[in-house]
Image 1 (tube, rainbow, N blue to C red):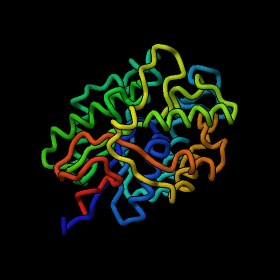
Image 2 (cartoon, rainbow, N blue to C red; image 1 turned 135 degrees about the vertical axis):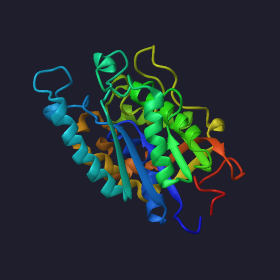
Image 3 (spheres, rainbow, N blue to C red; image 1 turned 120 degrees about the horizontal axis):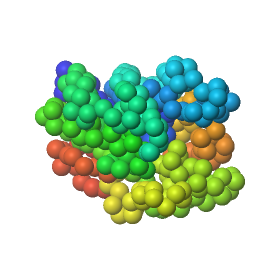
Image 4 (tube, helix red, strand yellow; image 1 turned 180 degrees about the vertical axis):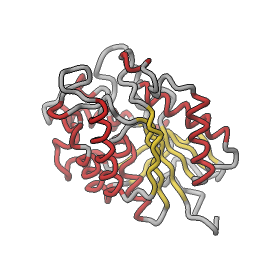
Length: 286
């Protein structure tokens, strides 16, 4: 590894997912001199338009939403110190069951082999030591998150020898309890956040939503990112067009950092032999 820097690659579905799920580790490892690469799979066109207008409502222009969200994503990356942003630019598939799932060019409708081949090219180019993405349920059942998981794991098979460690984002049940207490404190109900801000939560939306998170003892990796809480908050705030759905911004930086200052993962691939539980995605690599 003497001829290249240690590298973290995070594979996310939409603009703003990078801040919610991995903003702390992206900021922390960038500050430590580790090269950070963000892959964003979709254009985010199914997000809110100006004034919170929803897809399918009058005034929602998917192309304009995608262009705005790209600008916001660039701003978030600057805040987090991301070195390289790679865009796959598939169409946002919307939530499960939406017509957008089957629209031409949607990420959900893209053959896994096609997406995996494109991502494998990036794996070969950057040769990340650590790769982070979602679990097989996309953390909370969103089709684009599930697809990001699928193409990432398939791409890793196409790039043998790349990535010494692979992680899936998760949330410990203890953190989910604290999250719901905070939601009540700030006057937000669980149904509103079951999808968009599920990273610190347990199921509170429709009963068909699968369970979210894991028992604390099944979480393998706990990374302290308190020192980077302000950056993570500012990265979320950069996605201002989606502010209606970002519950976290309502609590202010101090409370946000207290609640969201540890990012947690499940290690699913490792060639280093680093002991578990661990506190560093790069344990065993430096």
